Length: 477
Ligand code: 4AD
Ligand code: MG
Image (tube, rainbow, N blue to C red; front, side, top):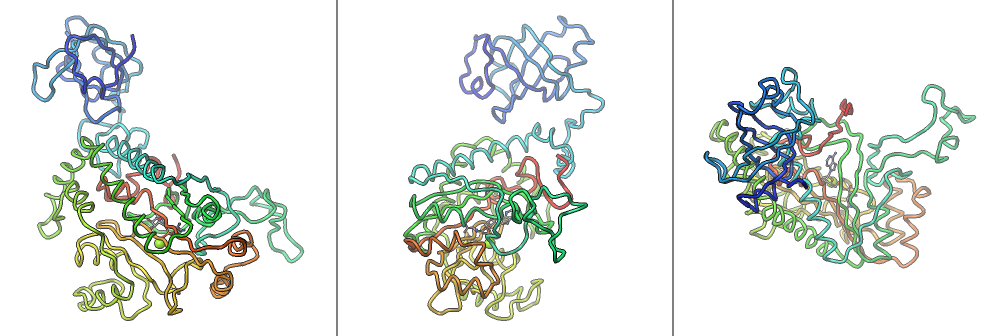
């Protein structure tokens, strides 16, 4: 007989039917009630057995984590908490779970503890919900772009160029670390390396995506990116996924419109399709908030926060306006910020971004026209020659979720900017070529996928929204 997934079983509620269910034991009470989850949805199904029919040693093997199959009839539930349950006629155990050493006990474990046993954290209610939602976010992104006729472009993971010019890259090499070949001048001879040049893991697919956009019109990348920055924060990973659309003939305003529409689409999709998982996370977070002192509690619940994000237009202000707001803000005047904003040109820290979003505007904010000195070489220089057509989107609880810009399409201006910023033009000849052959205005942005998942799940730490987090010192599994 075919097995029935629990999500199907619960939504169809066909009392009287015989079903086969396969899953893992969540709990086993009174040698009679087995709560089973198979990952297909948040909810468990209760299987009820007649303990007289089984040997006590057999019953002892049914413990949390045991993988099993039950066959039985769907009946209306006698107990409260579920509408239907399975009256069991047959049980088969696939794998027991060593009750003495099984690390998931039926009590609440900290998220830090669960990170140490990554293979089992999937089995918890919280991470089951998070990873089902992560899937939904990914699917919503693909459907958003597909509906708008964007092409999904796979850009390389190994690259010879530093797209962001920040130099925080992981080296890719097959050279012998202990005895690398040397040139006559004593430097490492990368000509002898696998690709006959220095290569790294990419920090962004943007530069390649620009080439795609200037032929296919509108493309997006969605792949892993790598940054060797040593930041141990709740918003940074060394390996994370980025979504990067790139659009020909689009200016900065088109870019902001696209980004806002995409973010709202993702949030609406999750609100509509992940109700049960979201409700659980929402309720858990209300419990957690109630433990905090009153003045530190967030005003909105998770679901309210998501709803409020799609209800209104995002705020759009220039960097210059933002600096004025920050300069005159209470925490700046009272020197409560770690970095005091003194003058125009200052780089914004996450404390400033979060002040603007969470305290001042209380909604998502798009900041644009940043000083050119704090932004990447490829951004289009404005007529004032001081600012570039950059935009960052700031979200409550997250800070920067998107970074993007209109690109500099003028070859001479771009070359001058690269020289100013010490970006080697020879290595990027292929990128400069599109400014020579049919250049046109174009724009794009990058969405930090995990930051998006953090926002829609309300998880405080970015490590808890990726199955196998990579951070400084962590790559064991
Ligand atoms: O602002 P970033 O550095 O922009 C770019 O890489 C551009 N090439 C994007 C483009 O225009 N196509 O990164 C984009 C986003 C950030 O806004 C942030 O959400 C996320 O990527 N991000 C990180 N997420 C997790 N861990 C990190 N270490 C991250 N660094 C950036
Ligand atoms: Mg950025």
